[in-house]
Amino acid sequence: MEKEIKEIQQRNKKVEADKAWETSNFRKTTISVITYFLVVLFLYTIKAPKPWLNALIPTAGFILSTLTLPFIKKWWIKNQQF
Image 1 (cartoon, rainbow, N blue to C red):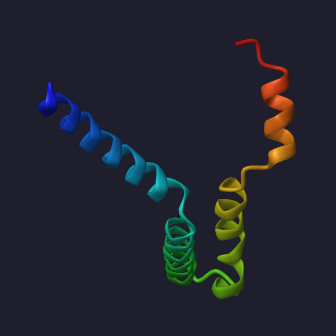
Image 2: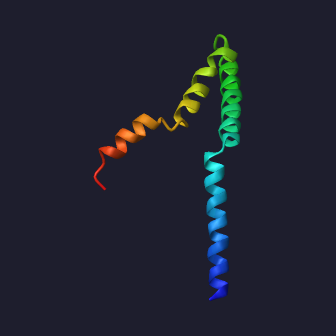
Image 3: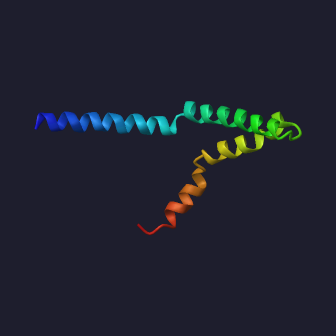
């Protein structure tokens, strides 16, 4: 029984760590920076104009996609039938 409890506690710690990672600003910032530089590289490779400026568009899209938008979330939850 004690062994099972310890296994559950270890699993819970892992789940908590995974959730903390998924919602961390560090993760979002890291992905944003990587996205930006990969898009700059791509735009530079295809000789697109102003790659450093144009790479901001997909990066901003990613950042917007990570926002929780609480007013939309509240509306969605209210209109769901659970």
